Amino acid sequence: MATCRGLSGGAALLALPALLLTVAPVFGQEEEEDRTIRACEQLGNADLEVGIDGIVRDEESRIPLPGATVLIRYEAEREMATPEDVTVEADENGRYQVCGLVAFREVRVRARYRSQRGKERKVDLDRPRRVELEVDLGDAAFLVFSVVAAENLQPVAGAEIDFSPLPISGVTDSLGRVGFRTVPPGSYGLHVEHIAFAPLDTEINVLTDQTAELRVELNTRAIALAPIEVRVTGRDPYLLTSGFYDRRGDMEDGYFATFPEIDNYIHLGQVFQFKRELSIKYRRRQLILLNGRPANRLGINVRNLRELKFNTVRGIEAYRCSDAPPEILNQVPNTMMLSDCNLIAIWTR
Image (cartoon, rainbow, N blue to C red; front, side):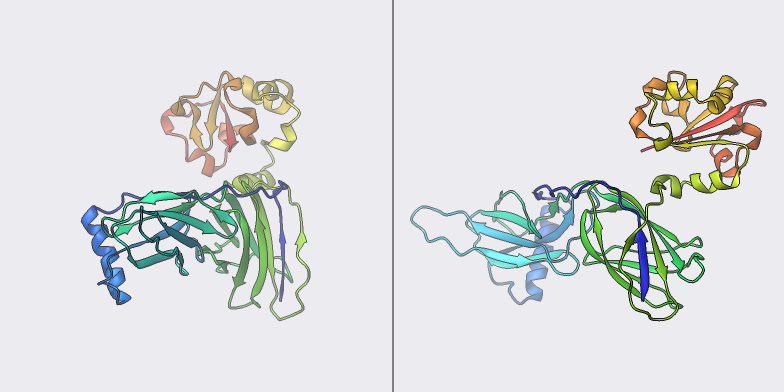
């Protein structure tokens, strides 16, 4: 089969927060009622009072959550029997619907995804309703996959990567890379496929607020699947996708530093003061970019570098303006270019 090697963010897997439920004001009252009625008609239950339908999503990424369950509990009224609770399961698209609810009572709705339970909320059943459910699974992860051929480590373009059961997928570019910026934390199945290689099926554990680069090796013939091996590359996914490492490897005249390389300093001003190569560049006339944009247009006074939160810095690069690479210069308006200057790019979280 294939070998999948990856970089794990190093943080412990955190307990996932509770679920949140909101009634999304996406549709007007008549529109949401008609939609719910049509859904019940498809089930042959249009004559049974009212119903509820909607989608269960992850709160941050808005990704539907297949297999989530929704518990509907009736609020008891005096001297009247309480109907039994109703439990429905979301389909492969994260959609759920239930028809035939007793209209003259309000209900309490609670969502559940895997082991997490949401807070109960009251829903008035005076008409059919669309109730969108949101699950707070924690801070999403930022993952970059690099797919290569196992025999020569050449990038594989056009490889398809699918998560399960979540509807997350992507296709690698000409460099064999594809990024996923908002992956909810949890354990998922991972399927990687390309017409010229044996497919790979494995599992991946995504941590809360994780940033990771994972390398996937595909084989041209089926062999026994080796154990998953973790390989720390030391490369930040954000800097990877911004081209930082490519420029660092290709350019001879320039200064480059990642946060682990400047972590022993207190603030950016101190870095510029004690890092000789960078200090020389900074003493000349300079143009500062923050995440690819002129810092002064973002309202940031870069003269006082203490204003930037040091723990958000992911990387710094600096060149003479005349030697700066085109992909950096393209972000600078011609009116801001100086005839004799240095360009300093600061990348933050």
